[in-house]
Image (cartoon, rainbow, N blue to C red):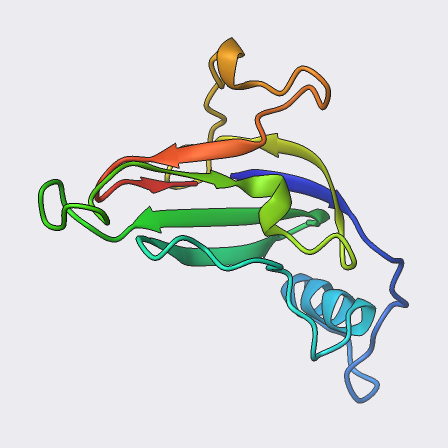
Length: 139
């Protein structure tokens, strides 16, 4: 999921007086903006879900790319093989960022996937949770 968030402003960074690449700059800005002992994730994921990746989008320092993966196959476990819903807004630490938009993406994150209208939170105006079926990965 493409997540747009607002974060504290970070000062521009230099690496030993040399020019940094765009990715190094983005990484340095996010590192400088947050304490090293804090986590972007504020709550545990369900036992059958893995956080596959959580990355800053290159060139878009206020956007994160999140991939979640269901760990079990259908009928592999009577409980853990069930579909599971994850609250995306509740998952991320509000002390570090405020979620302002969530957009489902294709697995390779090069195109948006339109959320069905019944999944869109009427107050926020965007989808706030995702349901994963057995062995499914969503971006």
